[in-house]
Image (cartoon, rainbow, N blue to C red; front, side, top):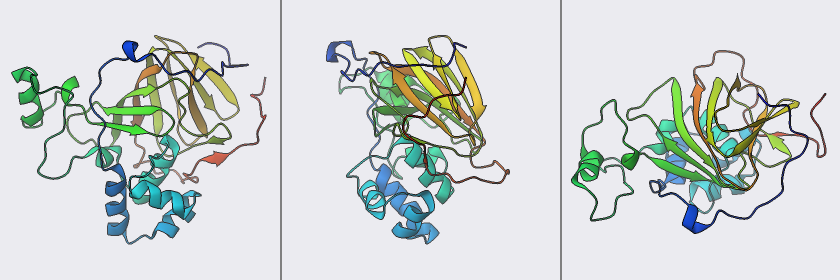
Length: 250
């Protein structure tokens, strides 16, 4: 592990289009799925907003697909509604997961999109959602898992899990392995900078924040264990406000 961060580049230039890798298309209907889950639970827009510490207007905009939630807000909503991340990725009933393959794609890719679910998840048929602030999640499990959320995560240049003056927390533990780029991880009062080949694990009930460092996207394999099944007393799940200008303790 490298020493805590004392400064980080402020660059926000997007990665050149020519260098971007092709990835599966993002899943649509995240807001509609959240709205349906809220209505099934009997909760109101104002009730959810009050519980997670955001405005009713933001919840309404998310549910109607006008804006995408940040990582922190999505975790807060799904935790409040008792949803797994897999519930957000689910395709509409009766439809197969969309793939990144063009019409002339190989027969193998086309079969992968329509084959019965098994233990193997092909890259071409991963389910994807794009969140606010330049974050993309790709689900790495082919079948639902009630205990583990296993993701391929991309934080674009300037990407962050929540605003600079906020942090998030939820149940369970998080584990990550960085494949490329550099990722800042703030846990409580400490900050760490991860480079390729480095990994990290931490208690997700401790307030934390993730953000890209430098001029390349940060790509990682991420796992969240037992987020909904954590039996410890739950602290608030909404992003936690922090004072601007605060620094990690020496």
